Image (cartoon, rainbow, N blue to C red; front, top):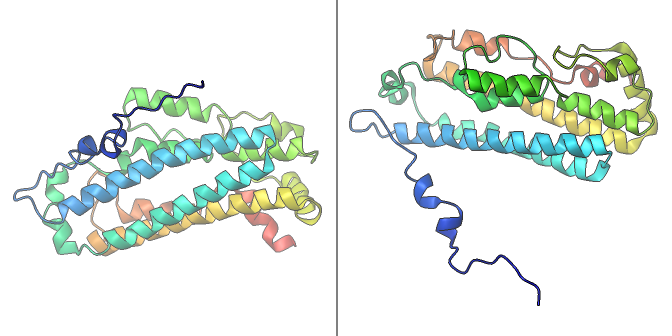
Length: 265
């Protein structure tokens, strides 16, 4: 008789730790202000989605590097769908007016989304490589991000996948220093053009990556406009320049080669 690990005492509440989860919303404003609960839940939900994105990107990299096309397509498609959810959540946050936000903003002190360690990890997985990315975070988090930035980015894994399928990705690109940011490469772009013309499965992988890149840019744009709509050009709570800083992150594609080839078809 086969054994299983079924726990008859397991319930929906215990499995999902619902009681603990519902005790994690702790407004600090006087009253507390009604809209602070929404603010907390939205941002906690973002952190959960960032955790899932990190989980999915790591799996996508393993799948790509193993050469598994169909599973890679499924995981990359899931990532794009999660990004859509992240964008749509901004619609909910925008139901809060500037006056409603300002009723509790002062209680946030120096806390800011700029301090989200998980989003920095997402950026690192997508290839961001600079000292400003994690310098404001605790040393243990900096160490975790340093491990990510010393290894393959998602694009490095995609290039490894393409090379595994026999495409002539330049050796110096495949063996480059992973701790430095990838730069758009004309030779890689030439290969990508040939892939789109002659290898439909690899081209689908490339298009999934472009979907994700577009989703990241869409999220950044909606985030900027939401902040501008709520606080205008005030300084951010974490000491950043607010909209000014966020605007500087716009229109910076992650997978530059995949955008550059658009005008060459």
